[in-house]
Image (cartoon, rainbow, N blue to C red; front, side, top):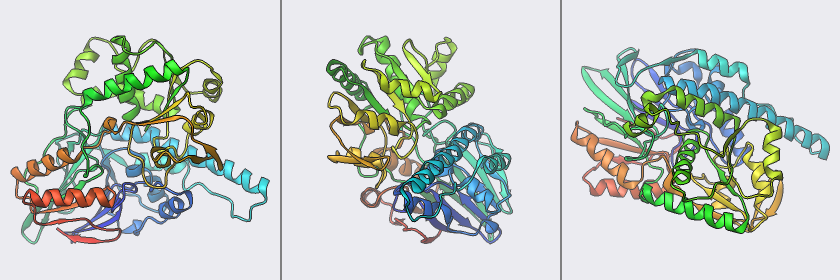
Length: 467
């Protein structure tokens, strides 16, 4: 069995890994690369493999850096099965349609700018459209957690709960070759233990090889309880300045988690009763999917649901869908909280809110997730004195607060403990580290080696691994 690492190798975006056996080629994830616009378009157009060679696709979860290129794969001729959990399929229905509409909107905007400014450039075409998304959804086959399914000759697949986002899965591949049985485990994005809403990650038995994410392989997250204190402090001081808090947030999981925390703080009287706007049609749709999949929740959230008290509703919370209502938010003078996508500030309505907010020192931009290199979100984290929004450089005068503790990714301790737990339940011999920037992966590799793992690799783009 051979694995080729096409994307998310020494970076955190564009997850694509090919598992090649004598009988089949399995694609683990097919995500979008996110970064500089021109580089992103080139890397997303070129999948890095021939779609005709793929036997089956295994999708770990619905985040766009893991699922976003699936419609392009199908557009380029792949017509086989795409295996995912039911919640992941429902989330993809919303998220991939949104991705197609954003591409169409961005293309219209940029083409108007090209025509208006007389720029010598080719017109922009979306990578795929809504028809391609519908074709992709029709090819999805849903599997329950802990149910083994044959997906190719001599290849079985079992999903375990990854605890990262709704429907996220650890993919367990059982491969029979030459009279031997190998069990390859792909974490996808691994969740944190003890976080609200979702269950903790499940540990497989009998693994012989592990592909593990390493996003936060070089750092620890603060205790979740500390986040509530910091969130309350940020909102209080921004409110006292008469400003607004703008929270760029991934529509899936992060937005729901922030809403959940704000509800707790409001109920405890720890923050003022200022309006909270969730301004993202995608987030609104995804929150509906959350309501439809209580089987993914942990016991504490199940108890809340049994009491008929939605974790995602409270007085003063407004879910915004229309463009007119979105524009009206920026016209408000009163303090408020605005939660809007996209999480890395590369597209969507959050750009308009940042444009209207970052030049005012009364306001706060609160970063609650990982920001990839070359994104606007990373430049905000770095507190650049000037940042470019819609092609115009603007002074960054607003306060910037980074709260990585909201991350749904496992931290260094979680990743080490997970690898050790996998080893304890099987004969784990080899580990490949992906989905992380080089310093994080190098630190995680060193820590794993110190724990007695002597075969740990950090593959680069296009590298292959015999496992």
